[in-house]
Amino acid sequence: MPPLESAAPSPLQRIDQALFDTVAAGAAGSPRRRLNHNFHAPSDRVQRFLNVLQIGTYVRPHRHRREPPGAGFESFLVLQGEVGLLLLDGGGRVLVRERISAGGPLFGMELAEGVIHTLVALSADAVLMEIKQGPYEPSADKDFLAGFPLEGTEAAAVQEQAWRALFDDRPAAGGP
Image (cartoon, rainbow, N blue to C red; front, top):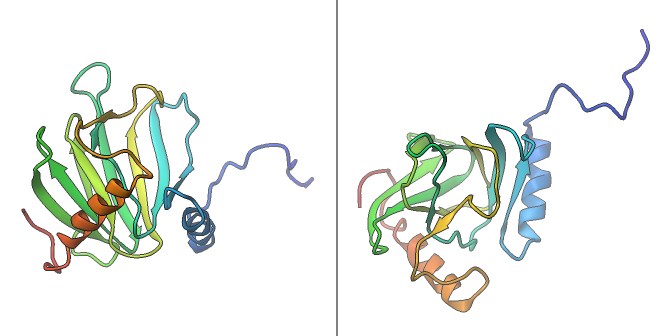
C-alpha cells in the first residue's frame, strides 16, 4: 500500500499531551498569555478549538450574539488545569463564579447566547476545549462589555488579579 501524501490534510487531529505542551509554550511566550489551536476552518458552522490560558491572562468581559438571535451557545470543557468562569451583569457586577477543573467536580459549562462572561486562569497551562456556533467572523464574534480596560494595559492586569482573588477563598464551584 503506498504511503499517504504529505500534502493532504490528515483525517485525524490528535488531542494529546504533546499538543497541550506545544500550545502552552506558545501561550507562555505570548503577550496575551493565551493561545488558541483551531480544529475548524473559519467558515465552519461549528468552531472547535483548544484555548490555553496562563496565569495572568486577561479576558475582557464579553458576550456572543449569533444569527438568528437565540441560536448561539458556547461550551467550555477543561482538559488540563483549572479556570475560573465569571458571569457578569450589564453593569459589570459578578453574578456567578464557577471553578472548572480537569480534576472535577465541575469539568465544563455551556453558556447560552448573550451571557456576559470572562475566564481567569487558576493554574499554569490551563487547557480548555471550546465549542461554539460559527462561522467565525472576527468583527462580530464578541460584544465587549463597556467600562472594562483594554488588553495589555496596567488596569487590565489589576482587574485580572482582582478576579483571580475571587477564587482564593473557595475550593469548590458555586454561586457568587
